[in-house]
Amino acid sequence: MLRLVLWDVDHTLIENAGVSKEIYAAAFTALTGRTPSHLAPTEGRTDPDIMAELLRIHEAPPFPWPQVERALEAAGAAHRGALAERGTVLPGVVDMITALAALPRVVQTIVTGNIRANAEVKVAALGLLGWLDLDVGSSAIRLAISRPPAVPARGSSRLRLASTQSASCARQGQRV
Image (cartoon, rainbow, N blue to C red; front, side, top):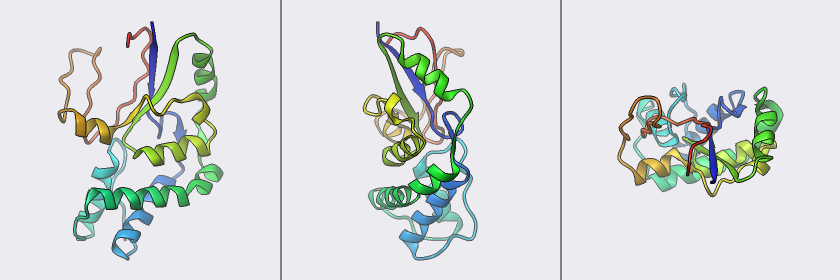
């Protein structure tokens, strides 16, 4: 039996020390040529939602998603050093993912609201990439596109996904 462990990135595996907000600001500037005067709330939201809100509150026109994604990816790559310098792996994470990696037939991956490229930048900058199989996981963006906006939850045993929320889950004994 294969066991799948799903991790969110920000505030679950790492603390980004504000670098994520800098990435959104840099992507906004790349798209509009302007510096944002304030940022959109980010916690529990996907990158498309954050960028759409950032553009809306600054009365900027919407941009096609591929253009926004390219701007986010370039901004993420440009901020990798800042993430490595200021970000931190949360306490206990390395011990937990190391212990899980030692178990037979355990695969660890991420399910996040970050675009794939920036999720990879974050976990790589802080030394966690080697324990995670990003090809198995997904960004909430891909899940939101391929699934209905919400999967009905039954009690606490089901994972609820919405296009405006990232999911964080590490469940023992879940068959995949």
